[in-house]
Each structure stands twice: as C-alpha cells, then as structure tokens.
Length: 382
Image (cartoon, rainbow, N blue to C red; front, side, top):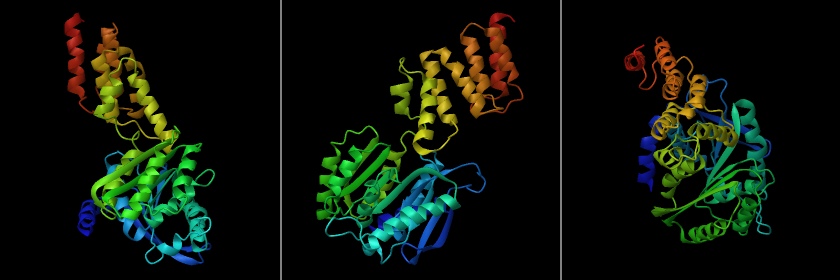
C-alpha cells in the first residue's frame, strides 16, 4: 500500500508544484481550537481575476489531501475536469472524535456535531469570503470520515453536491438514510462509492449492502457510481478511486470523446452545433462555471459536419467560433465553408481571402486559406 501511494505521489507532486499550496491555521469558534488546513489554489489563480472555482473539501487531509489535490490538478491540466480549490483538513490523532456519533440516533454528537458545524458554518463561509469560489462543492472522506461526509447529504438543501466515499465505515441506519436522501433529492447530486476485493471484510459487507440499495434509486437528478477494485486493499483502493470519482463527476466537462463523436455527432438526428451549445450550457448549469468552448470540440463538430455533409450546421458554428476565438481564422474558415457548399463560391473565395492577417489556429494559416481561394478561382474562372 505504501509503495503504491509513494508511486502515486512521485507522479503527482511535480504537477502539484505548479499549483499554489498554502498552509493555514484556522481558529474555530465552534471547535474552540485551532485547526491546520491545507489549500491548493489553481494554476494562474491570481492572473484569472474574473474566474470562479468549485471547492473540494478533503477530510483526513494529513494523508488524503495530496493524492486528491494532485489528481485534480492533473485532470484540470488536460481539461478533463475544471480547475478547483482543494482544501484539506488535518485530522491526525483527532479523526475519531471529529467523526463521533450518538449511539442512540447515530447522528453527530459532542465533538462530532461541533466538527460538522465547523465545516458547514465556518470553513466554507471563510473560503467563500476569501477566495473566488463557485457554487459547486465536493467532499471526500475515507472510512470513518467517509461515513461522516454523508451527514451533509441528509440535510435539506445540502451544501455539497458531490460525495466521494472511499471505503466508508458506515454507521447504523446510514445506508437507509443515504438511499432515502438520494431518492428524494430535488437538485443535482453526484455520489461515488468504492471498495476493493481485499478491503476490510466488515466494511466491505456494509458497502456492498449500500450499493444494493442505491441500485434502486431512480432519481434522474442523481449520478451514482460504484467501484469494487480487484486486488485493492482498504488503503490501495484510494489511489484507484480518486481518478475514477473525478471522471464520473465531470463527464460532461471533458472534451468531446471519440465515443461521443461516433454515437452522437455523426447521427443525422443530432445537430452537432446544438449539441456543442447544450454541452457548454450544461457545464455552466451543473458546475457554476462559464467555460470557453475548446478548440478540440470545435474541431470535432467540424469533422462531423464534413462527414455528414450537413452544411447548414456551419451557420451556428462560425458565429460561435467568432465569439470564442475572435481574431483567428477559425470562424472565417467555417463561414467560407458554409458559403462554398451552399452555392455561393464567389463569396466563399472572398471570405477565404479576407483571412489574410488573422491569427493562425489549428491547421489554418494564410497559405491554406489563400490556396482555398485560388482553388475556387480556378474552378469557376473568376
């Protein structure tokens, strides 16, 4: 287990070094003590003054923060997940009392209740005040702390939308309570659950029981994912589960995949440009992030239009390209292709020529655009 975590850290820490990691002491009125927290700000946080970021709260921050922060930085680097503010709460020597619950009703009690309020009423409020946070939050826990994160799910209007459960040590009634909360959820929720073939037997039994219950959840607002990793122990499963959870929670955020291209964009019943617009509208609605349409996604839609010969789709596409990549040849090229394929070759030729002086992008440069104009001129004798 230690060797796996060391390998994971060796891969991720060089990436995390480019992000801003801060260590702060938080004086809590609720707890009556000072707690150490770690904060990883996204790359170029200071430069992107108009940008807001989702927040990930990591319990067991003394050992879980670095794997989570590193993987989030890695996925964000490749634009497979948004950049996020990651906050780890150190609980070394305190996790048992932090997660304490009543033996009568199995809800947080004593120090556990105070720790619950510390996160919900103090920590998140300060983060919102001090940093540019978006209204999308995830919480992560492991065994005791994994059970604990689900208490937030039980509240009306939960303050977290995403829950990453790494081998939870479930309290009595918790499986039933989670199932009820997800069934009755009135806003979007992401729930991830993981165990391993070599997990602690008593924990695994409860986790498999929870999975059986959650399979019956039929709420369209809930995205549920379960993993049972082969040959993974209670500790090594963490290294496999974190990336799996990130991929599950941010599926719509990722660039258009080969699968999406083949199964959606190439279908004649689907408008590729509308699919693109709806994809980015969903990103803003789900995660509170206004994301610029990526060049990769423009190229995917372009290839789909060429493949299906649905030339009218270029109307929306060239307007979007002019909005998201102003001053480049992208929108000009799409507009020229529209005119070229809908019976206006002379206008297409002039549009290709007008690209001279605009910025190169993807495969588009002055030579390419002028060659397209010359080809039309030659074909039609202009």
